[in-house]
Image 1: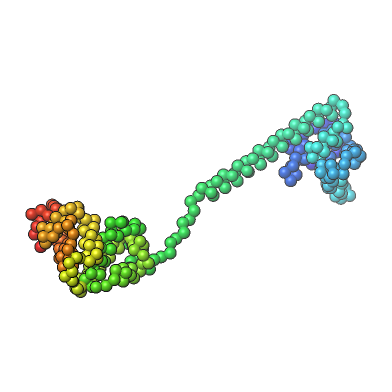
Image 2 (image 1 turned 180 degrees about the horizontal axis):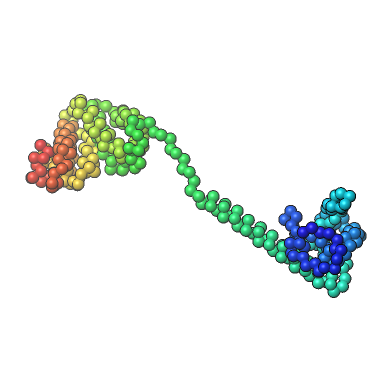
Length: 319
């Protein structure tokens, strides 16, 4: 709205936007608008503002002096004016008297209230939008760090993410103990050789996809050499560990129970595992009996019916 001094008696009905403007997010009005609405000379409104008995701090916060331009026949000239806050308007308008002035005071205060409410709604909407944006960022799934690739000849996607079970670990250690007996070597050396082959630092790092390969690689090395046996009256502890490992391996790899496997050993070589192994030679006999059963079982996986290895119909299965 272009504000000029009224020169006619036409009725002036300003809108809220005419009366109140926003300056840096604060509702304000001007001395030009006040002069036109209250039907006063602008120079007199300027005089009234300058003569207000308020503190310098209040004047600095609520009255801002600025210049506006006006086109004249002699050119464009600039004139002073004031921009007032709500408090500044109230302080100034207290000196305006009369019924008409009172009505315009109410109109101004209503306009200030309407503009302040609109600004408050806008501020709350911006704050709500920022809050929603922050909540979306906090709840958005974060990118997972990619694990470092492991050194192994198989591509990673061919490996199982699941680690060995307790039964698989016991089975593999049992086969390693049997290898140590036949090759007369220390279990630590055999385990280190196996881990080096698979580029692992610990048996706990081995995945289930490597389990079968590990077992048969150890068995292959085990059959390439034969170890020394003794005729001691009592079997060495390594034989018991190796036998338990092979039984666990067979039990884990088939539907046969440990009781079935023990009965099979007793039927094949006449030795009772429940009574214990009395010598290394008996231990070696049990080991090769177990290995023979495991080997034949693996060759007959496609049998229509799988029965206990101790049954008569399967007696020739492990010969």
